Image 1 (tube, rainbow, N blue to C red):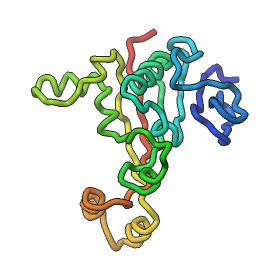
Image 2 (cartoon, rainbow, N blue to C red):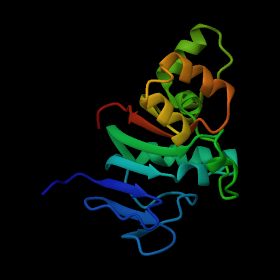
Image 3 (cartoon, rainbow, N blue to C red):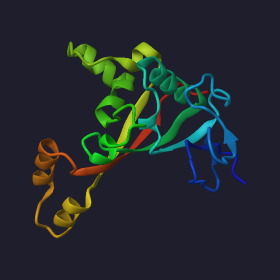
Length: 190
């Protein structure tokens, strides 16, 4: 039996085997309001976190959002993996839900990377060095864009290619339905 601690945060009705399913409503394995700190898990204990259509609902104020990022960092081990799925902020699925309080993007999450922060500092960039300010460090591993059905059908049929879809994403709403983002936690060995 594995000793890994894997959290499915904000699980709702989607309980996953092998995970501690966490929510403040419903029938999770563990009740927790993710906007109340500290979270109930010890430092450096979590190996994997899933936030499936959750993060866009949390942290309406910057202070609370920063608290969530700090708690996520605190409870995770070095090299822990965090899987985040969110609606694209330029899709109606994001815009039409009044419970969505914050747009989540890969570029925004990259502000929590100390490696990026140091590079931007060297370049005298204006990017907010949130990793350094908050003493957290998350590396962006991968982002996958899930296209809306209209665009995915055209892409799959070869009617539009990678370069064209990139330009379409920059120009139009309702092209990317959701983003699947993978982060890795960077810490000194514990």
